[in-house]
Length: 276
Image (spheres, rainbow, N blue to C red):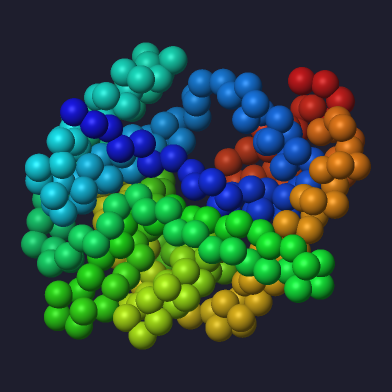
């Protein structure tokens, strides 16, 4: 049996978002990738496990004979493959419960599955510097509407609290504007848009909550998205040869970058004292 591991794409938005947020954070992120440690963040563990289950759910819906683990079996297998499996296993029951509720909630959906965990690839040209940048994104799910024939890119998002404010924060997200960039460029008039497939984790003894919403229009952000990618790539290329030590990269020293809604940046102490 095969396991679909929904990891990041090769040259995706996360790295560009990070350098735009804080160049030093980007340099430390790149350095950490050379010697990755086990994932221990509960939010990241739960999100990864549910994404794995949903990838198998839709891949098997497209091709029942694909030789994949069942969605629940995929959760178990993903846990087993981790170096800190006991830490991941703490969240497996909640994720499995949430997946089963998702399956029941959307049992009547009519989506035709086109692709699952598909890496989208573009080459973006920087005319002023005569350079080309590889830009990629991995789409969680690509579906076709059976009545209209339009094709949609669907992104699964988990949250502790689902509200209108939660949805709006993705309107200008580079990840979602990037999906729009790919959808329009690859599909033209056949592109229906981007769908946020929102999942709120169960709270207390309650059930999970689910909501699907179309991405809000942001025509100016779409028009300037290519320029944003070029700007971020220039930052990386200009600073990488200049600084050998990641801590020598400039930090932004801004409260919204150094302190997130979930607490301090992972590098807060290091930036404060110069050491771990």
